[in-house]
Length: 247
Length: 279
Ligand SMILES: Nc1ncnc2c1ncn2[C@@H]1O[C@H](COP(=O)(O)OP(=O)(O)OP(=O)(O)O)[C@@H](O)[C@H]1O
Ligand SMILES: [Mg+2]
Image 1: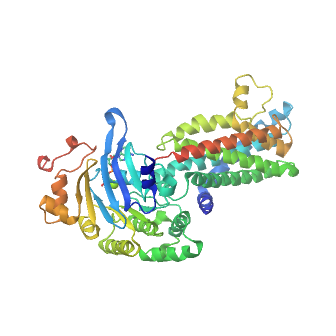
Image 2: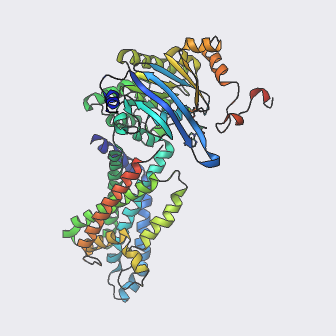
Image 3: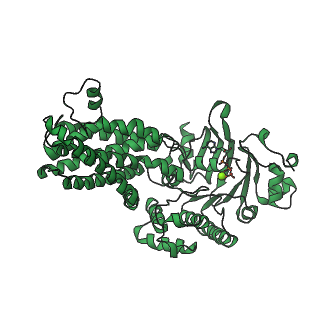
């Protein structure tokens, strides 16, 4: 158990020490909020959607959790490159514990990032339902664990950093854009509709939106159930692939 | 059959810390396949200092990686601390410590944090940990730099930290893959003395590789020489010198492995012969 704590702590320290990462991961959501929130806001209101910031904020919070978490998971590749991974792989601790500690640490960083963006969104006009903020935290935590474990699973299968750009373009970006973070999931043409409904982040965004603003597509209960199942699956997959790493 | 099994796992059966037979590792497939380790067999007795020598690319590090559960062998058997090093990985990891040839420290953590991380993972008691860390950082002259991030360290300082960390806990078996690489003679002597003391006082089995022949001469009870993935000689220093009619281990080493400088790849055919060299 001490080992899990130590690995968790290491991820937190690395996150807290990389000021550029925190600032960078803050700039992007801010840009999205300003450009889209104020840019699309009037049209969205005209179309009868109401306050776009209120709609967009949960999506942007989910985005920041997605990015920070999946990068924390992918850090396995860096650790392999710089050699530190060996140090953890030969330690007298099962690889599952190592993976668990790393994942919890990376997810905590993702969650913290989401909380920071939540406060930014507050400043920009988000008016959450405070009673359901704990439910929002639970959803946020599940998103964080799911994507950290997913990042770990992917990174465990990659030998070098070459594939990193590929993951960005073909995994992370589609997950973000096809999640309902930016647009409502109602009345989508088929194709997009199916894509969004099999996208894990859709349930995260919907859960956050349901908890924070009371508007939902799938409903909070469905979101939580789906996220719990997916998170369990991705942790299991990540742990399995991580345990098979050769260094 | 059942009787054999009993015998293998029975208590007090094995006098060996390491038993390897027919161990092989091939990297890649087809045309590009490299047989890094090719049917290696040897044993290391408990409490022995065993030097595993060989030219660059001979397969030393690959062998160590298999023994320490980092790499899966292509073929062969290996027992470490009496346990199957492939099938009982979690158990085996409790038996050994290792200093890697390549860097394995975390640049984003301080020297102290690197030590603390290691000590905790290796189950050093919380009450003993800070004392042990102070002792070992002091031992390699890094106590004053304990709160600096590793990325501010020189190459030699990093190497010292790797060693201090590897010696933080006292395992049954210690793998040292070119531990003194890049260190000054004073530091090297200092470290070998400590390791010798560990070996004598605690009976720690030492499995070491080095390219400094005098280190192996001074330290090793037994020596194996590996070349192109195969063991070409094994014995005490005296036996190796006698076998090759050499005066020193360096002489014996060169007699056994030739004058060729090792180029890319591991096949003898692709070696540049020194006397056929450009000048
Ligand atoms: N991950 C890998 N992929 C492909 N080939 C590898 C890999 N690791 C090692 N090799 C090859 O295996 C052979 C043995 O390498 P190894 O690192 O075991 O040598 P060594 O005896 O430790 O040499 P040195 O004295 O230079 O450290 C070399 O030909 C090397 O190129
Ligand atoms: Mg080597």
